[in-house]
Amino acid sequence: MLSQYEEKMEKTISNLVEEYSTIRAGRANPHILDKIKVDYYGMPTNLQGVANISVPEARTIMIQPWESKMIKEIEKAILNSDLGVTPNNDGKSVIITFPELTEDRRKELAKDIKKKGENAKVAVRNIRRDANDALKKQNKAGEISDDELKSNEDKVQKMTDRYIAEVDKEIEKKTKEIMTV
Image 1 (cartoon, rainbow, N blue to C red):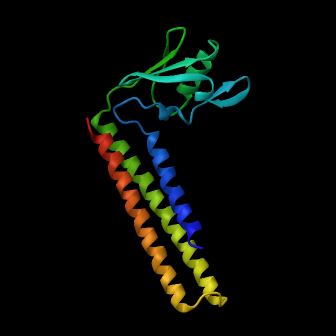
Image 2 (cartoon, helix red, strand yellow):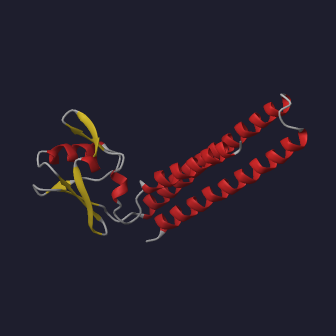
Image 3 (cartoon, rainbow, N blue to C red):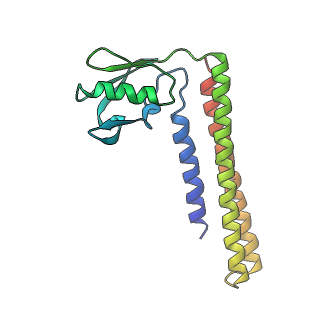
């Protein structure tokens, strides 16, 4: 019965980790392009669906479209995104060079990381509330005894504590990655 709530908490953590993968540290990370959609024959398509993405150097991402006419579309999509970088093209591929992160930008990103982490904690606590509400309903309906209610509420709390600690660990890991020069 409690497994469905644990699954939801697990999903919250994976969503947080996925969100963190789109935040760039000092290195070029192809995952920051994951949310970018390109107009491919009138259909919004993931960048990975129309091009090969590689990281030839630490701060450079190279995007090689399978069709040369996609270069302009890819450039447009990157410019319209909130990455804050300007793509260049050499006729065959689009190249994005990331500048070194300034100290202010690192602090800004660290705040953003903390905010996303806090949102994940709120989500975990909401799942705890839902689980406890469901347990109380079962108790009221006579499906479980008061002792079972107390025991299950304790389990839900331990589960919540474990996932909150996991969120803290992810926040610390990503903040350390961002602040490392």
